[in-house]
Image (cartoon, rainbow, N blue to C red; front, side, top):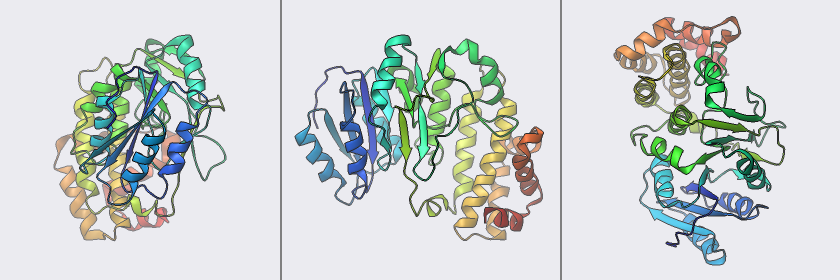
Length: 337
């Protein structure tokens, strides 16, 4: 591991596990950035393929590359390991199968030089789509106090099922001092939605946000692989989403705003995701009934399912709540197509 401590503007952290078949594109997109004021921290999370040797080869050729090798511990522990040695004032997280447009850092640097926001939001696009995801607020620099009403309505999930920003660490640029405690506080037991939890907690701490989602120079591209559906198949999904929901409930307690309405809606959304994951894993009525019943033994989750309310534009979530309340698993399977 390169132990250099020289400060740079950006630290780009890439967790990698068995990524040999696609990580080169990710790394090349970062090393080819038009802004060179960065370090690239590659975290090999105990890969069993050639990921580590590929990372080491890049480090030997480019002094901006730092490599960590650790025992497998999942995305959260890999991000944490990278964050602990990051020297940049700002941090970006990039998954090893994704990549950045070549002027992404240049566009981020321009906005940082102008406004120095705690969090910078730029564009994100699936590799199978022609347009980036939409962001609900216009490009600009905002003190968080100017976004309070927006956050209080749909930081996590709004009445129509939308949210202000994609709830992930992707396509974001964070002041290291702001994101550090949020990322480090995510329990290792959270195996689904952990990056969204870290992002929401960071937004609750941030004092300013810049949005440059309309700047076509900056974009985070997500690879949609042919096995992406199987990646969301999980027989233990109810247990994993229960851990996530309990963490959200604790995180949202004692905030300046009452986020309970959003939390209730989030319960519906995530319980329904659990249903789909179990169905895709081959689980049937018995497994679904048992999984939901176990989740509902937690009073916070059962209250959320009962009290969740949505606007008319949130009809999809109204249908999901109906399916959950009445356990119409056949309808869920049919809608999943």
